[in-house]
Image (tube, rainbow, N blue to C red):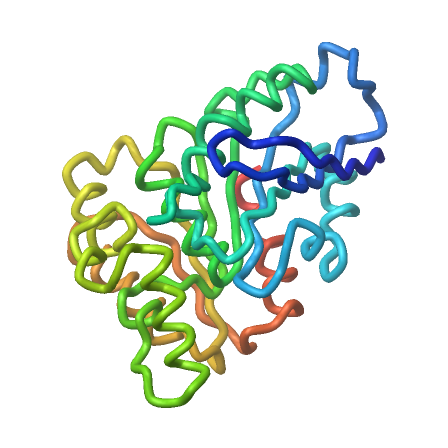
Length: 256
């Protein structure tokens, strides 16, 4: 197993970004066989970075056993958006980063090889990638995803909530710009319903004690009404790594 931490310059975002990767030890960077491996993008949550999946789960063991290339980007607190300030994190993930991986690691990144999963903010990001760029991934998994407008622009009563509201406004350009935009999960459902066959396989999981359970139930119900095929699991657990690690493993067992 080879572990990489790379800091590379992003024109889309305008800063150097850290990138963590796991490469199966059975191959070398010059081995053409690298292009044949399944590749999973793992997206972090609001308070984490690219290192979180390696620190808190057994993803290295899963990558070795399943012969996976694992790509773990860092996007700060951007909600995987092309932010209103001009920092284009979504474009970085869908255009710049894939091009970088092809050039440096000789990965083909064919759709049938590509998977994406994330937790919390990263669950939102995984489904954003799945719905807005269904040409890139064959399966997507949202774990405790922030999958509703009300979960993003939560009611601002406490000082912490007011700061969060202000932060979301800076990311999305204000609450008034959010509904109907490509950042709105409700918009994704409408887009997916127009051509469900284009979508990757969609998987969701949320803990029964998770504060984001209402947002996940809303998204699943709205997607089901729209005729989308979404595999949804509720199980014991909260907003915690024990839950996310277990359900990441279950999803990989299904899709691989």
